[in-house]
Length: 112
Image 1 (cartoon, rainbow, N blue to C red):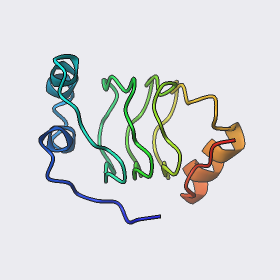
Image 2 (spheres, one colour; image 1 turned 180 degrees about the horizontal axis):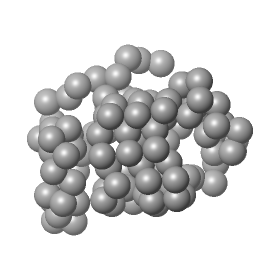
Image 3 (cartoon, rainbow, N blue to C red; image 1 turned 90 degrees about the vertical axis):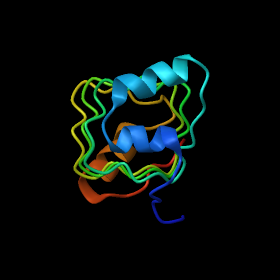
Image 4 (cartoon, one colour; image 1 turned 45 degrees about the vertical axis):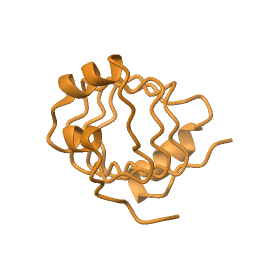
């Protein structure tokens, strides 16, 4: 696995600045973004529309993911160590054990 990246992509930078509403609107307007291997640690992403996002290998350590619907988000290889996940809906390919291992130990989640 590659190391998490701080990208120069405009859409990624909106997330880093926690401008979630603007990010969602620009995606609705058709703008694409690359969140593979993205460093999103510690961000408040609660209002993120994550449908269809490719977050494979992303680093979400201590991010606030509460209430997010991640069921249509590609998350293989993502790490959620110490993240807030109450009410989050994860992809069906992720077992509860994988989610727990990543949450507690920072392992990268594997699809089954």
